[in-house]
Length: 185
Image 1 (cartoon, helix red, strand yellow):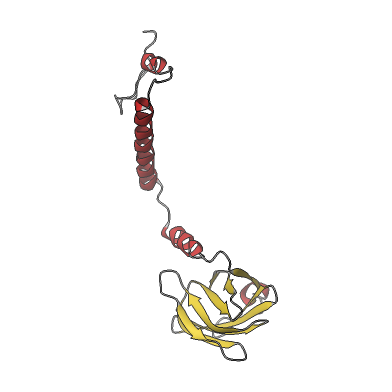
Image 2 (cartoon, one colour; image 1 turned 90 degrees about the vertical axis):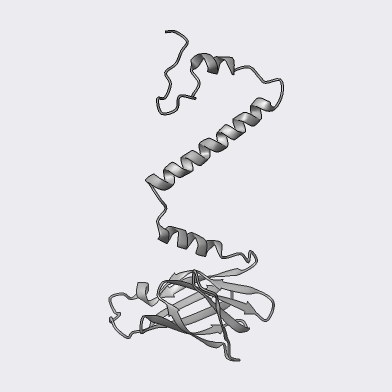
């Protein structure tokens, strides 16, 4: 038959070619446009459900996305990881009680850290130089931040971080905020 297109057997409500041709005219009012919006929303919801079932997002990706979204302080300076003993000298590292050394920089400010693994947790000792902060906050996805004091010489220690990604947030005395890049330890 001419003029009648095939219909999807899974959805008998889909229009045939004749019905589509009749819809090529511009509606006189907004009622048809509103119906199209509802249909679009229903289609998008159906596609979301199919995708979530057929190819769900891995939990590690969701956790990483939430952690990345956690940077809500748009004015914060990002201290980039510039040195990592695990990357810079992997052949020299000896497995066991060796400390991992991390170095972050944001402008003139440097944050040097030593990470030690003990009983399945991580202790981070560090020194902030090139700026003054009264406290450093350690952030781990899914846990409340842990704030520790910074000495007059810039020293701080955070005990008991779980293995996995963490970052440090430093509220400087001049009002600036410095946040380290997320680093997995």
